[in-house]
Image: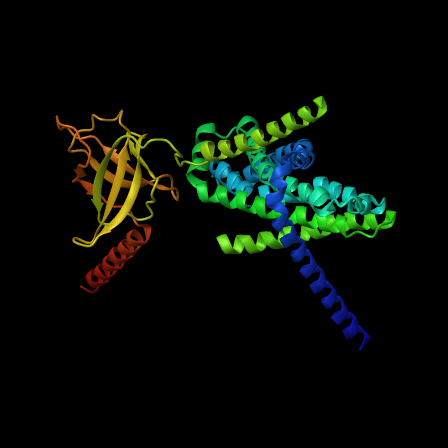
Length: 255
Length: 163
């Protein structure tokens, strides 16, 4: 009996959170045109979320690509068709690995920064101070950070995929010696423009989801040291789950 | 103030890098030509069966890719497949009695059109149709033909055995 009550309670609670997040998203969307007048804030946050994530994104992409190259070569050489390594790795990177890995890294690198920054602003009453000065903290603090993340994610996804393919090429062509001609031509024959737009669409959707979750958790965090920590943790957990869930839905739709 | 400019330049570089990566993907890892003018001339050919031939498949002569398949349609007047292919303009000296056949790269690879040069003195020009064609080898047909002839051979052998 108690279990049932707890279950109903938690179901109601998660519905409530989902509704609040969505309303928050609509609010941000409604404010977005106004943010174009303060482009400098958005640019600053794009720098924070995007340019500062470049190193981790590029390093990880290189290693993911190299692992793909090694594993793919090991498997494909057993059936004597290592030529299609380029095609398989490029498809895997553009459609799945690129957007998903970028989103997970983005949630860990930029999402946590957003959540803890906004959470600390709330904990130290900076947001209340803004409200006292008739400055809307959602417009001044939250929206630029959200938009910065939304702009940064597609760029990061594209960079991840390109560097990843470079990594595959590094192992496949430079190290184990697949013929570069067949490597690239098989890749070109297999990858279509639709695959790239699917990857970029996924990157953009994940960017919106991860940024939204980060700013929501930060903005609604409990204003204590523990609360900020918890908001940061929740950002990573929820972003990761949301990314993988959305990835499944988008993949099913675009198959 | 200087610091802010550095930040803006950094952002600009970041976005530029992203666009460059996207451009790399679109131009280097796909075969589609974006924004490049379509050049060359079009030839058509009719096949009994195109098998697994796809749009974008290479048209090759002596193993060199001279063009690509641009469209595959069904001609309901004679129930054959009509294949359009665009030949690159530098290959403008293909004799107009050259034939086209559909081959497979490797055992299970992609299918492509292979052309063999004829001996004519005049050359193909835009809009010409290749008259001599050879259809794709469909593995299932081949196997069933083989099975049928195998069974026939066996029954014949059995009859001879009775005599």
